[in-house]
Length: 364
Image (cartoon, rainbow, N blue to C red; front, side, top):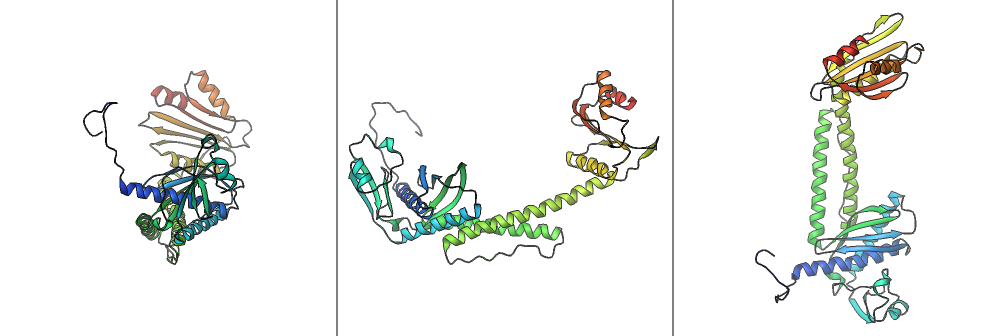
């Protein structure tokens, strides 16, 4: 209600939005045709688990008896099913409504009934029939003829369980054309972003070659989605390269430390302030990989905002007389509160950044 009040005894006028009802009919009938087409393509190895239809869109939940792990083959079969459904739409098939009892519906008309509990106790059931292509028990609203659907397009699908798919679709030319237009714009935007990132990297071949033709609108849409996926992967690759370059620039100033030689052991020790987690990881990995023998690395990273110290102690495996765990034991002896731990050759701990803690660490 927008305003006012309503009570149980009030008389009201109900009105159905005509256009929304028509669109719901189209989507519902498309659901039946897609179901029939998927069963055709997958050799009747499909069982409907449920569906949702309204004036805007539809989805269909299906269970498959066979494994769905072969992604490329699955995409091909779904495209095949979509084209098969479109062929049915183009045949201008009349929708027949037949009332009969449940047994006759199953035995005589061979109607599909996946929700038997709904029908077993009914004296009369309703069959929705599109020639011999789609015959189902259904109580919903439908088109009079498949030509009213215009075009049916599977827009996406996703796994919702083991060998279970949810398939999303649209009907009518205006909705399908808008969906295609949005995907085309997305591809344009991706290509533009790829162009910009490629120029930053000074790449000669700064795009992925894609050739799309509109000989078949459904095939065109599926190829359009493939092109988008391909460009998204390529763009992600470029972004990772740029991110890695930025990271290297941030890390570079910290990669020139020289170890002190004490008792035939190389000691690398430094304090770092306000270093990001990624840069920290790069610094640690660099020195670990470049100083593999007879080296002790002791780094402290100060996070001023969080008021914490991150401590890394790394001891080469050929320094048998040294153990990073001894350092932890000494901290505990000094009632030093910290989180983390490690092993004989590597520890990583976090503690509060206080003057007392800094003195204890320095003394040790």
